[in-house]
Every structure is written in structure tokens, then in C-alpha cells.
Length: 619
Image 1: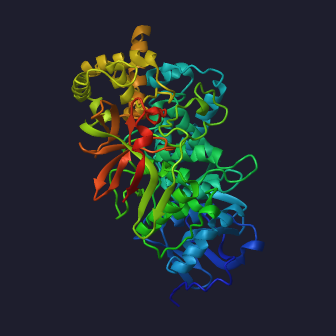
Image 2 (image 1 turned 45 degrees about the horizontal axis):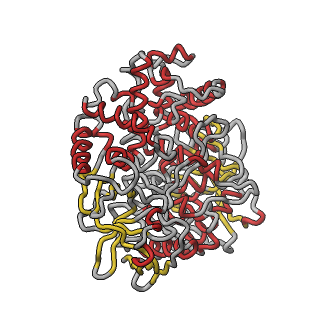
Image 3 (image 1 turned 90 degrees about the horizontal axis):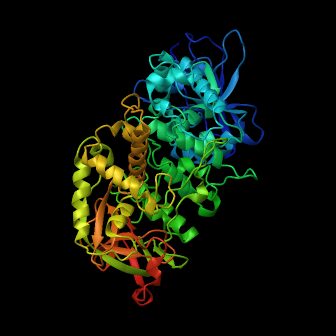
């Protein structure tokens, strides 16, 4: 008799789940299982599976019971095949996997089960992160990642970065394999796998008090090993080529995010410690097929889930969900930090003050959250030393949202200045490959000379370079006058088209491999370090933004889409100023900005500030 497609039966209660009981089998044998219902309150031991959903256009068959089947994605087929017991083990594992255990065609069940996923993963015996089948020498790559982390751990007492790490011909001097050793290529192949970029991987990886088990094919490794490997490469403690930048950096960025979140998600009291907005900002890179899951996938690990009261509902529109989420976050905290997540492009029809979580802003946020450093590393700069803006000082303003008109209104704000000059967008990475950087710097510095003097105490030149890096060094500490030498080295190098120094800007930011072109003289090394330090600082400041000046003579960094005539708004209590555009008596938010000389609350001390306070509404 021909197999019959499996038909889901209704779950008995909101506490019930389905479990897959996998029959043992060898890799070449078909997948057999049974599906049973269980009450989560007294469910048997089971493994919760985390995997890449994959392409559903070429399904594989899962055989259920005697004569039924389900079509599942190839990636889920590989996962179930590799986690089942072998025939020699003769065991039957219970597994929870959303692609089978949730009736995806039933929107109501899907919403109800998704709202339970935090409990499903937390109550599992083990969480298994499946990163794909064995391929491209993956077992060698995983073993090498563990080897590299152990090698670095033995050298951890030193806080000095050895430049030979970024010179592949010198690797053997450090006890590392030669660059042609297949271990390097095998590890890079593992690090390029797409699993870290899933939105759901965040919840699935963080919910257990203990880290998940990472499985690749039939091999396993400690979950933090790959996260540590990429983090160490980005810190310069392992070859930077392991953490690619540019078109291939998504998986690497997401791995770093997951590692930091894993260490910061639980408080000392074993309670969830990170609010939804912070999670949304950190996880902006993580992708999902249904845009609603950008929010739903994080609710289970958000410390403020109950306070915000956001319900999983796949019948709501994406625009309504994003707007209501932003509304509840603003109302709960009476904070405008969410406005810093606004990008220049949106996929959906949203008010200007509501972020589109499917489109990450190209520029790095001025109020981005910080993640913990991998445990045990000696780090010169700590989170406590990070320069944090406080443009609105300790002032307070009332924030109200009209759900009908979809407007955000602050009762106290000052239209501080009008933008009268806006440059072309600065795109650091391609400009480092030619002379475009020098032309951009010279054109804008020449414009600044016309200002005559600067309202802040610095000279015009100092105000200019401090503006370019948004007042922060490469270590995110407050820039002081001594950092001028980094600017001068960078300016001179730009004038030379970065000849002889291009390879010295860390590959973490260039997307090039630091494997050659290194000088040996200490003076040259010092120059390269200075250029690299300013380049890194520039990426956190002017990169993907435009340089601007105002009618009052201030310099700043504004969103690339800013236009002459837009205004700078300072709001008591807000950490940064905002660029606004008039819209029929109200304003549209263009985005956050940096204005040199007012980022510590100086604008609040101006004689006109109190008299200029007014109500401002964003549409």
C-alpha cells in the first residue's frame, strides 16, 4: 500500500507538545520515527534541536509509524539522521524539532507553540545546535578550532598583541601550522556556515543554563569554541583572516554576538538579564523567513517580556507588529534609545520613528549596546571606560504615543540648529583602496576653514578630526588631544593613497587577509598602528554617514540621507541629538547624529535653551 501523508491531530491542551521518537539507524538507511503527544509539565526526557530551516523546495521524506510520511527540508533530514542513535546503539531518542513538532499550516497552533518555545528548550535534557552535515573536512576544522583556543589560552598572560599573528609566513615561529596546512581552510569553511545567522538560533542557543551541544555530522564540539575563535581573531589574538569582513562576514558577526549574549543573558540570580530592545539591536544581523519572527524569536529570552506584554500572533501585519513593539518599549522605559536603530531604508510602511528590524542601519549606532568580553581574556579597555554620550544631560521629557495617528510626541525639545552643509557619504572600506579618502578629507577640511572658529574650545582642525571619529578612539574611550597624532598619520597615509600601509589596517575592517606586506622597522610599525587606530575609530564614527556643518557653526555627523535645511533637535534626557525634517507642522525622523561640542549636555547650559523648549511630534 502506498504511504499516506501524515495528518496532524489536535494537541490536547496548551501545555502539550509533540515529540519525535527516532528509530536507530545507520547513515545510509531511511529515517523512521513515531510522533507522540506529551504534556510539557511531565514530559519524558528529550533533546531540543536547533538547526537551519533550509530550502523547502526539495524535500526529503520522514517515515512515520507503519505507513505515513512527512516531507521535511533537507537540512532537517540531515539533522535527524545525524543525531539519531546508530543501529549498533539500539536506542530510540526523543527529539523536539519545530519543523515536525509544530503544525506549521495551523497559524493558531504555530503562535501558541512559539510562545512556549522558551519552556520547550529550557526543559529539554540537552539543546543540540546542528550546524550541518560533515563536509569540506569539517571534523578537521572543528578540532583545529579547539586547538587554536587552547594555544591562545596558554599565551593569555600577555596583553601585547604579536604582529606575527597577522603574517602568515611567521605562523610557524609561533607554533601554529603553516598557511598551506589544510586545517586553516577546513576551519574557514566551518566558520562560513550559515547557522549563526538564523534569528531563532539566539533563543535556541541561550535558553539552557548550560551551553548547547554543537553537532556537525557525527562530530561534536563545545558550543563556545567557534564563538571564541572568531572573537579572538577580531581581537588580534588569532589570525584576523579567520574573521572575514565584507560580503562573508555575516556568520562571523553573528557568532561574536552569540558568544557575548551567551555570557550576558543570565544574571547571577539565574534570571534573564537583557531587555528586548537590546536583543533586537544586537541581533539585527540575524535573518528569518517571516519578518515577524525578528521579534517573536527573541521574546523567550527577553527579560522584559512580561512587562511589555507582546503576544505571538501570526495574523497581525508586520507594520502593526513593529509599530506596537516600538510603542510598548518607548512607553515602558520613557526612553528614546530606540530611535538610534532607525536606518535609511525600510521594507515596510512604518512611521519614521519605528525601526524596520529587517533592515540594519549601515552606520554603527552611537548608542549601541555592549556585550561581555570572552571570559578570562586580559583586556586593557573595559566597558566602564567606554565613552557614553549624554547630550540631554539628566533632563527629563514626557513621551506620548498616539496609536491612532501613529505619532510620537515629546513635550520638551529644542530645535538646536539647521544643517547648511552636508557632504557625500563616507564609505571607509572602498576609499581605503584608493585616493578617494584623501579627496574627501581635504574637501571637508577646506569647508571647515571657512567657519573661522569653532564654538567648542578646540581648534578647527581638532574639532574636525574629533568629529570624524565621533569623539571616540579605536578603543571606544573619549578622544583627547593626544589622538591628533593618529589623525595626522592617517591624513598623510591617505594623501599617499595608503601606499605601504593598506595591509596594516586590520582585516577585521577591510575584508582582506593580513598575510603579507608587513614592514619590520619599529618606526614603520608605529606609523601603521597609528593609521590603523584612526581607521578603526573612523568606522565607529563617520563611516556610512555624512559630515555636516550648521548655521551656528557646529560640525557633526549625520545620516547619509540628510539634506540641507534639516534641523538638529536636542531633547532633555536623550543620549544623542537627532536630525529631523519638517512634515506639515510635525517632523519626520531622519536619524541620530553627532554634534561636536554638545555631546556631554553642553547645549542645556546655553541661555536660550529653556526659552526655546517646545513640543515636537514625529510622524
